[in-house]
Image (cartoon, rainbow, N blue to C red; front, side, top):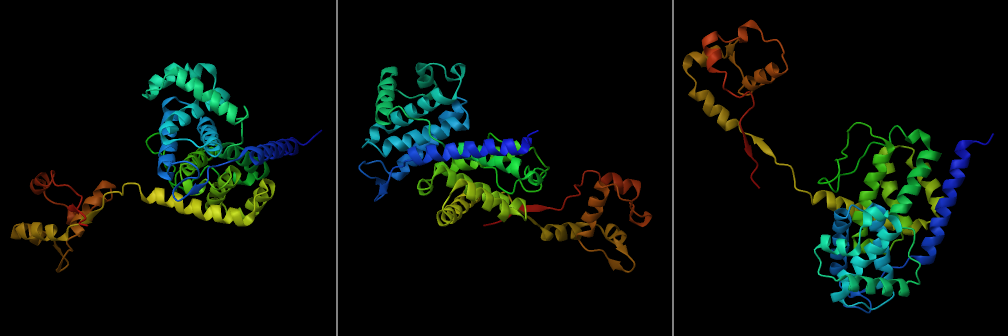
Length: 357
């Protein structure tokens, strides 16, 4: 009887090899010169803005991540083939996404082109989209289905689970930051273990963000996907290097190019993390405590003295925290009923004030 693990491994190796062949044959990206696409007046910022807009449209239409990635690849290939004018960029991008949806999505998900145009809020006509479809198909020789970075994320993830089962208990943990907290659950350090599929979802979101960075367009999808996964493996397992070298060998990626890509991806993802709004920081206000202590009556202050010394200002608030956790309070620390009733509305938390920049 054949080993199911070996059969699965061979099947995944075949999928990876086929994807690499398609990538080597069809991968093409526009070349930038002096801040613009060579031969066109489309700037890198305009192109990046258009990719971000495609991501918004992809979520609006409820397409899968593979559709967005394929749409970006089609857009890249066309802009590297023809000299497009900026006024046609949005129409080209929208049509690239529509063509990708026709390849990846079910008919009931896509709907009609007219419905998609109405949903997008664009002022394209159906005739313009159909005309642009014919132009793209003609220039790309009707050969649109290339391997995308998202495809390689899924293949590499399957290879990890199949070839390195010892990673399965820890692969659901994340050391990264949630890049789209508005639509996805946050995956933060220290959270409980999750199924392995959630880790692939995080890598997919990260690679989508990287596809919007024009500095990372120079790297093939297989290299970009492997860089993202390796950054995560470094934090997940001490045995990451042996796992990484296995994937690097199968992906046939040049090591120098991979190291360059990995460094740029790490820097870019960290820049996204630090661009998120910072948590509010509050400072312990000891001056207010001292003012409150001075305002107490002599009788109340005398009750705070124990063993010939006066307790520290913060001890009063530590008593409150102990009460929160139902810790026992000694009889000497208990207030009488009258004073206890007066203290009911006093918060056990110390006074705080916002930090001043």
